[in-house]
Length: 320
Length: 178
Image 1 (cartoon, rainbow over the protein chains, first blue to last red):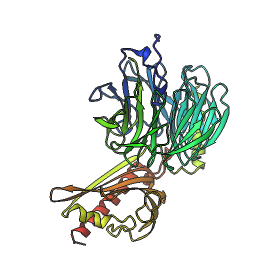
Image 2 (cartoon, chains in turn orange, green):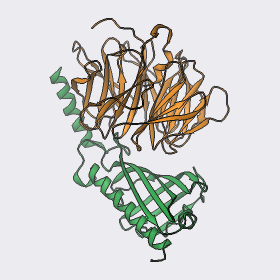
Image 3 (tube, rainbow over the protein chains, first blue to last red):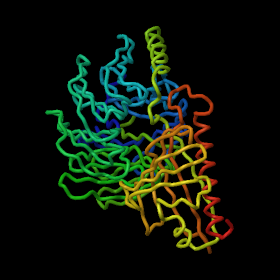
Image 4 (spheres, rainbow over the protein chains, first blue to last red):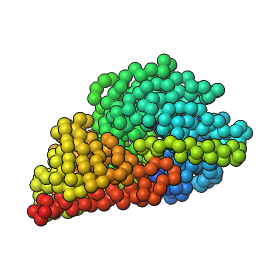
């Protein structure tokens, strides 16, 4: 593999950590994962439509990009698989069999893939280079999304049925903490400096703000009905949350003012923010499109059709 | 490695068989039904707008409701021929003539879906109205090996038929044909 610049956003949260300065000239690419359409499609920054979609196995659910931007990892909980997509070749290059119902994903630079089992209570740790046997870590019930800190020392897991977040040390796979949050945590995002973890609680309609040094909830903010996605701007000042049942996005500022609310398509789920924090991309699961939001005017500026059932969305900042 | 993965899969299978499925699956399904009604939107909304009044829906034989139309606290228990379902109100807009709600307590015998959220809305359509009912839900058995009566297809069929029956009932009531 050639050396590549390594700014990349994984599940939008890491978008927060990206500096545009070392990416001058690189076009951002938005990747959209569609469950019913079983496809990964690409929107080049500024484009009006998706490029020809990459076909995938049945019912893909969650999406992350590798830190070098070369690959996408996609879970298929119904068939117990994780697909690895080469984004340069635009095709699936590997399909891993994973026990249970693999859902939430995180991938580390050392090639370790972390996979939550939706119908279980553990995370599988798989060496994608095939050097080490798989291991498992016990977490709460129904692990939903996973997120790694930028230094990859800590892995956070939203335990949907246990109303908690597990914190796992990646070095030895020990559990550092289990943090009680609101009802049904699902999606997460980290502040750019990784001091704060934002946890969207689907049944609570709230976001728990977790201090990642003390592993404590410091505040709970109201978002809207059924928050299913979260992303933070690169300056760390704004949190963008999709409210699935309201078909809206809440833009939550650091101060305690009520969130700004933007109407989007039907049943929004995944959200990602570009590197300079001017645009948010929202996957609208029901209406089969992506809302492009201008975060300065707080308005939806475009809808881009995509294959059926878009759920996951991620932004890459360089050519694959 | 292949052996270990297979062993893990076997172990997971035996565990799955011993555990009840969680109330919420990883892969949602959708339904969307529409009907046109020969009456102005305000008249259609009049029949629909009380969350606790579902007399327009012939599939519901009884309802017990509390909390009025207050999102977050309003709740209703609807009785179908097959059993009871408890639903909670999430979103309500008199202006937009729309409300959104979710299943609070599942009952697979009443309806073979493990969780749902839905929105019903009235919009103008020519001289009359259109009512759109959309739902997002999960199969009754959210494990990877559901029986035929609790799989994705069964869930979509049940939800679609429930919506169609309700919308036909609403149309008949508002147009004065019930």
